[in-house]
Length: 416
Ligand SMILES: Cc1cc2nc3c(=O)[nH]c(=O)nc-3n(C[C@H](O)[C@H](O)[C@H](O)COP(=O)(O)OP(=O)(O)OC[C@H]3O[C@@H](n4cnc5c(N)ncnc54)[C@H](O)[C@@H]3O)c2cc1C
Image 1: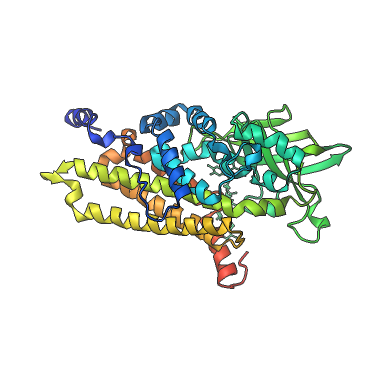
Image 2: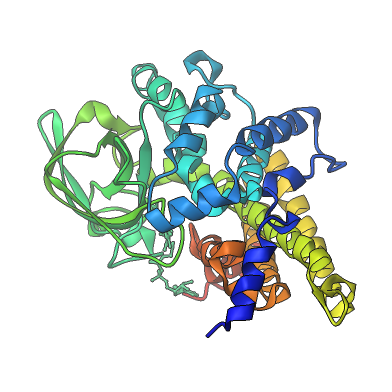
């Protein structure tokens, strides 16, 4: 238990620079940024500077969706960064979107801020690429304008990462499909008007390859046939994650994206971009953590000098910066390759893996550099650590990335 003198010391620390807004320290001089990336970095940092660490701590403890950031980004047109200009988007690349997501996270918003808009940024790429003109016209403008929110439903409780075995089904009845099944870990389903959902339309034993027979739908979510239940979780409490249970859920045929049974091929198309963006979000949190630690280490005096004078404090933070920068270079390389049409997954997967691991280590070190204060919510780094587990687990785990590299790059036999 904290003694009285310790508590009063905490109070006297309050007005000091340690609580400076994270956004005041966002770097924008990274020498490798292109002109458009720098423009994104500066514009997003400016918007985020209205949302200090205290805002993020508050929405985390009150479990309130960060509508204010979402609206601010929507009003300035950022939700359509990757979507076609024709529908109100900016038609920039993943290289710019990665900078946007890193900057949001790095401002101190972390995975909470990033996840609140993540689905708008890239989630509807399958619709942009594979939807009909009528669907694009119907779905993209309200999403880009921020009037509609969407979520993404792939993961299922019984099959997990073994996506091709997912058990939810859609049965064609006249002009409709009837969906039955369940999903788990569906982020923002409490808020979302729409869901992009993958279900099986042809049973596994009737297709030549397990990748066949899955179909993708983009449809209204808030209907009585879908039961949405929030999962209590470790971090990112402001952005809900849910189980969905649905039965006799009628979905019109005009809400199917692409051809029947071709849904997995469509989803595959966006996987690399998804990993790049999550990796960029992880990076942001890692940089935010070491920045906080460095600020604290300059201010906090023990044994008559700032703790930051000790190499035992300096070196882990310096090591983390180098690892985060290395991961950033791979993520930006993966983004550039993606924008140039490269379809291999090795850089996007490796970048996500390296960024999440480096950021996790950075968040842990930031707590240790703060000593006991690292454990206090007031210093924010404990929130960062809780959130940084997400990019280590989702959308694909560390182990599955290792499997991918072992098989696809090293040519080793499939292990599962
Ligand atoms: C906060 C959060 C938000 C999420 N949001 C969404 C969302 O919006 N939409 C959505 O569809 N999903 C979402 N997910 C789900 C996420 O993508 C999955 O949790 C992730 O893909 C892992 O699947 P699983 O949890 O079923 O793990 P499992 O498949 O049960 O795996 C458990 C462990 O076993 C390991 N493992 C399994 N098979 C192998 C193998 N062959 N070799 C080595 N190791 C293996 C895994 O790597 C993992 O460590 C979210 C998850 C979280 C935590």
